[in-house]
Image (cartoon, rainbow, N blue to C red; front, side, top):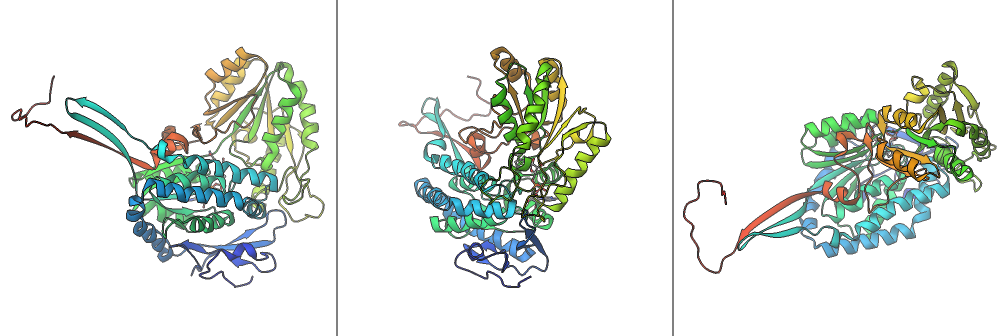
Length: 519
Ligand code: NAD
């Protein structure tokens, strides 16, 4: 391990180094400077395709975490007072810089997260779209006003909260930070962001671009680490709100401890998304969409389709789906022909393979087995090839667990009603899709399914940023009250204030008023 560090560099130099020949430790970003951590504990980040060391992420020290919060606190009054048009201009520049650095961001994602370079470009785009939509803040943040009585009016405003924090997962290294930064900042908050300790690179580049775009010192700070950093954020009194995306294990803890400390928390959690395939579906289009949604990004998307529910004769389509899955190229994400990259870590690979093993033991049929797959030239990567399991029952481990790998479990039922009942019995409720040519079947599904994001002949129905990301049930903490981006995203990062005023030309004294008006 090279002990070189980026130091207090003027740019994020880590990205310009060959990380394999000379790994450089990941710096914090405080007060618009990349600062070398004084950490004694470091977390190694490996390229999932090779397991070569890419960088080390610090468990930032308590002093560094406090310094990041203090920086955000110092920046807040002036940033809040900055006109909304000036904040908007900075956001415009930020979006342009993200576009200019699109491939650089995507390369950092492929290197650390493993997804294919093309897919990593999509990861950046989905975040960029949130930032671009947030540029419309000047019309989105307008309040309301009503003359509520003679000469009396009430107006409502939305004001920033103060210092807010974001805690991000590994699977969308650019998109999830960009669900948070643009909206929080354009509404006048300052932010402390903790990227996933497994994929810090994209966030570092975003910090560099934010500074170049004109974010004043302290408006965006990055700190690193795992549980200790999260606990600091949860308990730090000056942090007013927390955005979290990740697993149920971490998210339920973060939601309850953060809420108990009086903070607003929005927390998007895990999933087990079902696709219902009817016999009247456009078979080819449906099977292509299913293969993409089950195995793309190696199944590590919170909206991946991980359960296929065939209705009646559509179970006969499964062999064709298996052929499509078998045809996908599994290799390192930088390989031009790759469709499916590696999974994030050796532990994750072992966990996925053990869940496939449990299905076998439980009596399911492994129709396509991706365990032990080693692509040419990448013998040390964490690869699992597409896997299709049939004859699955709802009490099996492979059905109950979020596998988060390129594994599709298939259940067959006889009717659409049975399919909807099965979906509704599942504790998760992120996404659900139906493939059919029947409008009435689609309509029945749409109205009766308990999932937050429903696709009709659309495999991954993630709403664009003019809407909100609307998970349901166990896929979102707090009953789904605080969703990311869209109008609810703006509401999350702002505090409403209402002002009622009375202005009269003439002096009217209606005497003392000791009772509530009864008109
Ligand atoms: P994760 O929960 O392991 O990590 C997410 C963040 O929480 C990281 O920053 C990590 O440092 C922190 N963390 C992890 N364990 C913690 C603990 N015990 N205490 C405090 N903090 C902890 O999630 P991940 O593996 O990075 O991401 C995959 C998960 O995220 C999947 O479950 C996936 O479904 C979910 N996800 C959900 C959405 C959504 O919008 N619903 C989007 C993306 C990912």
